[in-house]
Length: 485
Length: 77
Image 1 (tube, rainbow over the protein chains, first blue to last red):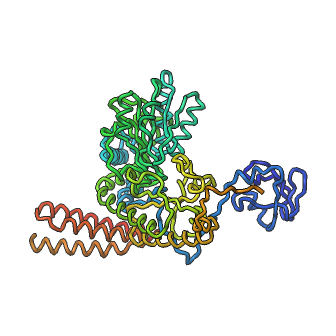
Image 2: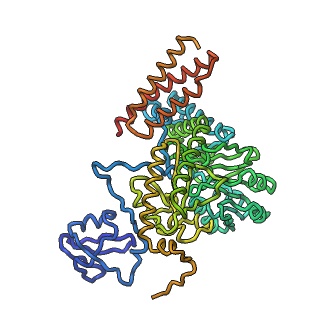
Image 3: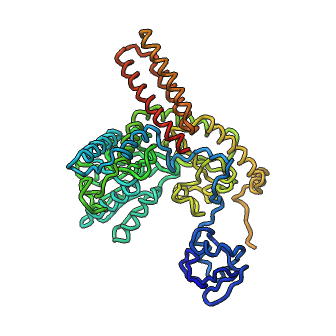
């Protein structure tokens, strides 16, 4: 039985003969040995072809399929029965929900399930009052008015709304947007879309310590600049930008300031009036809240106008239509209020643990570089580069600690992170960087274990490395002329 | 602090620690134990009876929360 099935992600159609150990592709017959499943289990066709076990395909001239699929050195696999789950040290990717947040959310998932926009019955009224309480809790954390908070589906949607919305609203008179090279992918991608719509975008470079140069920033503001977007705390290297100074510059030049504060909210004290920020993105799942909810702060005085991205019934001041998910909003509110109470305690603990980790590692291992400024940073995000060691192999060696090399959105590709490239890290150091995330629930035992494991594995990998041998003998690697064969 | 209030606070502390030990997740369990201990230690020198009473009420609410949250944690493990 012949069936046309879509084999690979290149989208080409192939004929497959079910049950027989051969495939007819483009009129040509390949034997069982010629076909290789590049992404087993991922496509419908691979399930059909599974009885055909050992098939090898040589993609001759058309090498597209090989390069378009990311090669995963650390293979995704289900945990064995006895295999323990790894320690969680990736708090910048996401955070576990605080039990107090779940406790606040449960009634609204189970019993109080009304739509907050229903005005005619008790289900709607109680849901609405919970939503407004949550709004006030979020506003209190950042020093805003509750009417200035819009609930969204996350920081990515907030960033999209802020950047595209403001730029498009003022597009008749102002066609310039400024951002930095170390922003989150959603900000950079929104700017790319704006560029294709005819806006001109400036991507400011950052200094070697990750902090943006204020004079360069001020010089790049033109009379037709509508928006400047700088993230408060970077998710990969943890540097904290000088938001007060940037806010001062923007206010004096009449430019709106947007900041992606997803990693900063609830961890450092934030006040939108002090920072002179006009738009701020907040993410629920970075502050021990639920996933799938975030907020956008939109200043009312002086008023910031936005073109809404999502049209509909006019909820959330007309800026973001759609039913507000009450349980998620309540969860975000609870997470914000807990963060406000626990900020001091958490800050002390996270700083202590981060220092402990860095001290332990750097005292035992030479040639470890911390990426990003040492002072202007959030302590809980530690990005270390281990020279003469490859990052993926170190992650594989540290497989019982959940770590990341670079951000979750970029870790699929083999390219080194663009943030590390923007701060001027060497190619080889960028490849060998690991991000340690420390949060509210991290214990001393976990930090000690991670540090020890890291020291052992880095030493082991360095023993095996010929580059390390050469360095030990005193050869300067940069002076070597590598010959091509 | 009056003896009755003192023994109430101590029994509240002990109950919170006992309930916190029931979290199946290592991170939640250690956090709850540590946080309860640090909170009681930080407020140990308080003398004002109204503030103490307010904190005791808050502690009882937190105890109820821990009891409630251990159940979904155990069930979903």
